[in-house]
Every structure is written in C-alpha cells, then in structure tokens.
Length: 536
Image 1 (cartoon, rainbow, N blue to C red):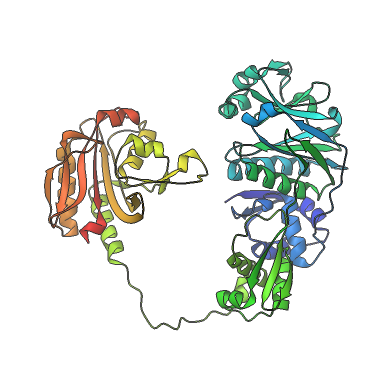
Image 2 (cartoon, rainbow, N blue to C red):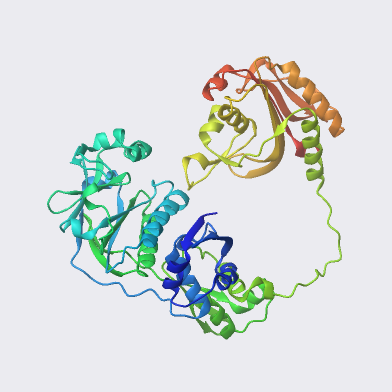
C-alpha cells in the first residue's frame, strides 16, 4: 500500500477551504485513505494500490473538494504549437510516449517534494520500476521547439548531477541511475532532443543537467515513455490532471510515422449500474437521486435512466472495472459506519474445514520437529519452476513482471529459492510451508493444499528427512509406505514416493546437484512434499 506524505498548508491551499487536522482525519476514510498521523507540518496517509491518483497532494485535495462539495472538475487543457516528432528509430527501443506542458506554475518546496513523490510512487508501484512507464520533468524555457523523440547509436550530453559531457554508454556505466536502469536499454539509446540538438533526457534513465528544474522555473515540460502503451497513456493523463491543480496544461502534438495525436489523451469513459442491484449489494434503500449525490462526493458525474445510473468516469480514475465498484464508491461516500449492522438470517455455526484442521496439525508437527515456517507467494517466476522440474504449471497470460509470471505447482522450488537467498546465514536451515498450489492438465487447473519441508545442511541426507516424514505421518494419524521413485529434481536412488491407501500422496528425496547449481546452493538439500488433499 503506497504511503504518502503531504504538507498541511500545501493541502489546504489546494483544497481552498480552511479545514483543521481533525477535519482532515475524519474525511480521510471517506476518500479511501488511511490516516497514519501528523509530524509537524507533514500529514502521513496510506492509500490503496488501486488509486494512483491519490499518491500526490493534488489528487488528495481533489478528492477532499469532491467530498465537501467544492468544485473539483479538471480545468480545460489548452491547444498549443508545441510539436514532438517521434522518429521510427525509437519504436523498437521504447515505443510509447506522451507529453504535455504546464505553464504559470509556482515552484515551492512543497511542490518539488510532491513531484519527487509522484515519480517515485508511480515508478515503483504502478510502472514496473520504469519499464512500463517512466516520468521526466524539465524546465520548459531551457530548450527550443520542435523536439524529437528518437533512438541513437551514441550521443553526448551532460547528465543530471554531473559536470561534464558523457556518452550514453558512459551514462549507463558511470552514473548511479545509469547502473540501476541500464538493463532497460537493450539496443540503441532512446533520446529526447530539441531543435538545436540539445538532449533533454535519456529515458528511462536520466535527464540532462541543462534542462533541470530549479527554484526559478515557472513553466514545466513533462514526458512519459515506456513499453506499455496503456500504462504510458494513463500515467500521462493522471500526471496532467494532478498538475492542472498547479498551473495551465497545454497539449503537445506528437507526430508518429503513421499517425498524429494530441497529448495527453483525456478519455472519459462511462459505465452503467442498476440502483436495485446496488441497494441489494450494500443493504441500502437509496433512490437514484441519492445515489447520484453520493457519487458526486466521489468525483463522478451521473444521471438516472429509469432504475439505471449512467456514470461518467473521470480520466484519472482507472480502478472501475465492474458495477460492483460503483456500489463500493456509494458505500464509501455514505460512510460504512452509518450502515446499521444486521444479524445473519441463517442460524448455523461455522466450523473449520477438515483440510484446515489437517494443515494446522502438520504445521504443529513440523514446528515441533525444529522447522521454521515460511510463507511464499503462490505466484512466482517460471524460471524457478523450470529450474526444479515438477508437476505442469500454469502461466499468466499478461503478467505484471517476469518475477510473477507463473503459478506454483509445488512448493519445493519456492523453498530452494528461499534457501538460496538466505545461504549467508548459519546452517542448518530447516523450513516448511503448508499452503495452496495449482496444477494443470493443459485444459483445466486444480487447487491443492500441500505441505513441504526442506533441510539445507552439509550433512543433510535422505535418512534425516525420512525420520521427519515418519514423525509427521504419526502426528497426522496416517499410515504410509515408501516405494522407489524417479524425479528430475531428486537424485536417482535417493528419491521415494509416499503411498497412502494405495495412492501416491507425495515425494521425498535428496535434491539433484544440477538443481542445486541452478539455485547456486553450495550445500546438500533434502526435501519432502505431501498433498494434504490426498491424506484426507
């Protein structure tokens, strides 16, 4: 969850109404913010990950104005003569870009802090650490138009914070930001260059020293570039809407090889929702007119058409995907504490599922055997699953990153990765986990609950883990047998299949050296994995 810090005086100035700290604390939950506290002039808030418009004082101020009934519409953007030529050379390197200009801005210390905060939060939380999108901010009055977005084999400029010119290659190898983000530049160097050949930026790495923003800056030029066109477009619209609270926004005409656009693109989409469905979902009896008023407090324009509402979504809101989201906005604006609690009509008493009870027994048994429980994400990199071959796994069609592009089909690979990241700690390492996995037959997927344990030590052997298996099965009240097994992750002759009631219920063995090498583990590892569904 993004943590955001804003200055009290800056926030109040943007809201345009004198509100006390106590007033703001009361409003925060109704605009989807969690109040973290106050430190001098700093107000600390936690926003939800689905609201990127709330990572800045401008977005929070807009939400407050909507909630208290003050005008909060985005000011109209202005047409201009600013032109950027997008050269075809950059389309293979970093193809998507959106730009705009902000005039008449007063660059206070609070605004500088907000600009830095917005860039940091959006880059890390929403833009895949600059891969999908990166933001650049420049002093408009330090370069000449038109500008060109292109890719070069090599070029020289003075990077931000440096005193001499460097080649693009030197920027990537000799500056801190260059080393951090060199992996995002694969071929030629993407550059933004002005009419006179002056470099504004090497996206997504570093801006130029000559175009940096200073205390005397009154006009800004902003660009957003990246590999994900949808993210680039949304981030540019979000940033422009935020900065429209500080100055006047001017479009930039972007001439691509095959089309021309006015940037940024402010797309206002609309959605419909049934008032009856909303009332049923949140347990209310709101009329269409009341729903429209509550939606206005959340920044939405709506009108009634019979029992349905047609809701216009502002260009800075990307979190509405379903009519249920409209119901949530109405409930938040009304206030969850205002709803009267009702006792459930079903007179039953809940009990724990047998699988959960069995999982708890397994956890207690392994803790008693000296193991430490770890919790890993069900999503992981397919690289990890391929390094320790096991059951077929499902891949994500549109993953957020390469680190989370598959769903684990067993727990052992995740534990090997965990052991590899902690190999600097003293041995032995004894870890376990009892969580869900997902396996697939190519057509359907199945969720199963597995328990897995691993030992990493210079003396780890099959016999040691066999004694753990024996103790675990006795604690679970299950009888089992072992038969020799063959498995690509385990050593042949040091691998066994666990049989329960004539069915295969798990595997135990010493990890094969080639798998240890893949995870850069220097000591032997022995692992056990059981399917608790089979034990039921």
